[in-house]
Amino acid sequence: MAHSDYDFHDLGPHVRMGTASDRYASWRGKIYSPQWDEEIKKSKKTLGGKSYAIEQVPIASVDEYFEHFSILELDFTFYAPLFREDGNPSHTFNTLDQYAAFSPANARFLLKAPQVYSARKVRRKEGWIENEDYLNARAFDERFLTPALERLDERLVGIIFEQEYLRKNERPEIEEFVVGLDQFFREVPANAQFHLEIRTAAFHVPMYLDWLADSGLGFVFSHSTWQKPIREQWNYVGKRFTAANGEAVVRLLTPLNLRYPQAFDLTYPFEEPVAEIVESEEGQAMVDDTVALAEEAIAQHKAVNLVLNNRAWGSAPDLAKEIAERLDERME
Image 1 (cartoon, rainbow, N blue to C red):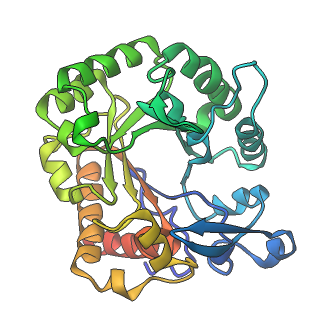
Image 2: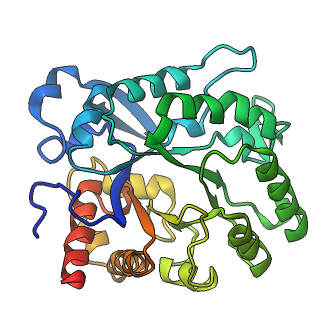
């Protein structure tokens, strides 16, 4: 099947295709119809000393998004909890509330946990300081988890707990690291499936990986700057899907060994696949590894959530099309 209409609902019950964020005006003609043209919001983004024009369709377009995709990762929740310390809803809550209002009943979401609960240090005016809310289970539940579940109900299928790369002099011993995470997830209500994306590869050792499996927490297969190829991640996780609910998350974010600013500049304005990536050995390996992992999920009767970013290919819808067509060929 050619997927020329960018409809990825026919990949079977074990594969959910989706993207990381959704409001790209550059997807008009593929995902979005002209009905949003007069509601496009324009802004500027400065990155790496360069300025980029950013155009977004309104949140209401999410209904049209789900005519093509089965899963959507919302990452704005990474930057602030849903409720402030004073108990009032934050801007993040208001945005999520709009997604809840406009998304259809069959929508499925992955949310990123606020970094204030996953980051060991936070940036303030005085510089980087120790984060007092790191692994604060009570605040995480009250200010994020419970209200997220109340707004999205069964549409919320997982939460991604991401921790950025830690330099060697910043890392705790692996025992301390695992014990801290274990205490946090024991204290957090077990009413959602958590998937951990720990970007420090030095922590990806048997003690941590076995703890993930024993705790029923998902290992996020992440294709990003400093990570190993997905096929290597599959091997060192023990060729297993660790999440208790039988689902896995694969995030294709950037080419390997390419920093965010460089990947952004290479793929902007996110309209078409970028030949430099598509024709590279690494780009083809990323697609092959993803298809192979999806096949493993299908064989094991697990579900895999494929979350694609524009920066990984040039256009997330076109990366979805490439993966879907290759998966179709392999499954014939």
